[in-house]
Length: 555
Ligand code: FAD
Ligand code: MG
Ligand code: MG
Ligand code: MG
Ligand code: MG
Image 1 (cartoon, rainbow, N blue to C red):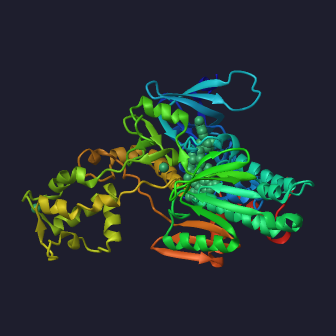
Image 2: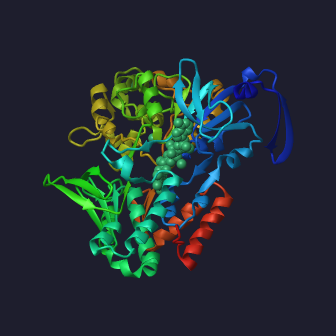
Image 3: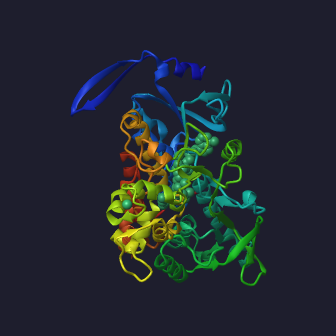
């Protein structure tokens, strides 16, 4: 019924701002089939950024997500300790899409199956106690998969049963209640000191940004607020971070991971590196120390598991169906189109861009660039196509930058270091032979997801125009026929709040900053990144309230 309602079409009236004059544009939708239908799965960072930038005047857009809100995940660690309230970090999806005068449809449901053959998705409503049919299917012309990833337990026994995760808003709220419970348990009469100590041992598995930030938040919560309320047990509290690698924050600059380790040591947060958790039970964690091979049992009051992400089961089924079963994550090309699956696009944490190696296309590039067919390439000829090459193979730019080569002539040096005027194909291959080593997959971050969402929206918005007037790199092989520039990621830096009003930041241009001023930078960046004025005001109010009154420590 729902499906037939939307596809029936009708008269569409919408307002458009042209040259600052508000004009009412009336459009009669004669044939609803002319308007293509886009179905979007997910309302996280990727999906929301797509919806915000999507011009819906030429498409029908339908959104499916089991949660009817967008969650500002970077502030979730603050929610675990009540520094920020849960309500302040979520924005209803219907608020985000309502300015489109009801043109974007939203269904609170989860996708169970993608059926690429019949261009449809099977969904099940997640609304509780629904009167009526739970399952429905939606047809699409274009499908945008933005369902994010799920927690990865690496099949470690006991994790699902006994660990907390920190992925969703509900997780953060549950952690907050459990932390307080641990203190209430620890002060009960009749417990031995050892038992109190166990109840107050907080273990965090995973030393990535989320785990580290949570550890720092928890430390502040305990030492700024809880010790005053539970003075009898204040010396029994312990926080431990277990990391399988050699350092915490190992995706950050070395200086930052060093700073974090030193700060944690001073704060009394124990960091166990080179340890792998092999089993978790109700009151203990079993881990293997990599260097010695021995197994150690650590008693705990609470464990938070934060060790990376994995693929959702229905995405895995979809991958099997389209021949990507051997991969660990869904792959798209540089235009974010799912490989070997027409009309399906994927953005955000659920996917990875399969970047093309320049060495695979080196002969084609050479031939295309050698415009006078002389069999050699002059520097001028190479410079003419360099811009196109960089669009198609962004690793070239990274390579030039990381080797401090500002002039391409330096690429053309021979083995003695003399610059050459021209190179043949062998010389060209040699010059670019190390470029592909600069390829790395994009991180699973909100920044990547949001940029991908807005890139893809831009592609749909300019569809007709670009097909008539292709703007992509026209030089090489099959890529030449594409109308759009491939997706390129701009890294704007990353933050790691470390507690005690200190943060570390890594900014573009190899710039690292650490300390109190960085925390203020963090406050301002995260306030400005809020999706609405409502959440921005709520978040800033929460920070102020905490500063004045401390955190709320009731369950
Ligand atoms: P998500 O934001 O996870 O969204 C997935 C969406 O899909 C959700 O709306 C979900 O409800 C929906 N969905 C799930 N299953 C289905 C289904 N079956 N059918 C339909 N819809 C479905 N990144 C940063 O850049 N900076 C940070 O500081 C930062 N801090 C973080 C802190 C925490 C605690 C966490 C958990 C993550 C943090 N991240 C941060 C990472 C960032 O949140 C993710 O990279 C980002 O959310 C990915 O966006 P996404 O849209 O791909 O997935
Ligand atoms: Mg999303
Ligand atoms: Mg999200
Ligand atoms: Mg990704
Ligand atoms: Mg030539």
